[in-house]
Length: 176
Image (cartoon, rainbow, N blue to C red):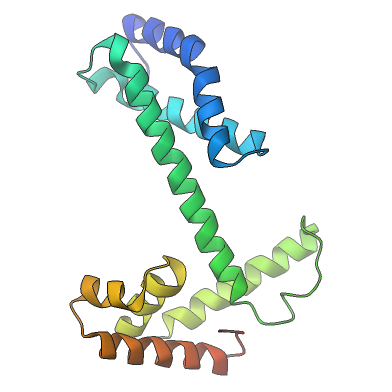
């Protein structure tokens, strides 16, 4: 989307004034991960470019908007990373072997194949089992929270969770 000249000037001014502050703010979420923090700053300014023509805030108050958006971008990225970590814990022991932290291209292809296999196995679960599995294992909710979200009893959610984990275990996934 092309910005009007006034919006372009405002965008450039905000970028010059706020980039370093936002970078330091994002770096607090993941210390020593400078590239990660810079990616979150980039994502924040992409959103500014998308929303600037429709924002009704005083241009001088947009620093607060940028701060809120960068916080949300950081939190979303961390949640996504946490879900990825939970998925990788489900890999069977062959995938959990002592691989280097930066996988080779072959390792990355193998990991992707493993994730696709896991996705197929999760799809094979019943709808309620899949929902409980996602809420508990991928999003980090307790079974009580999942029961409340799904309007089911805690006991039923516990049974669904146990059944889902048992099914994945029979498909050679290492589950806790």
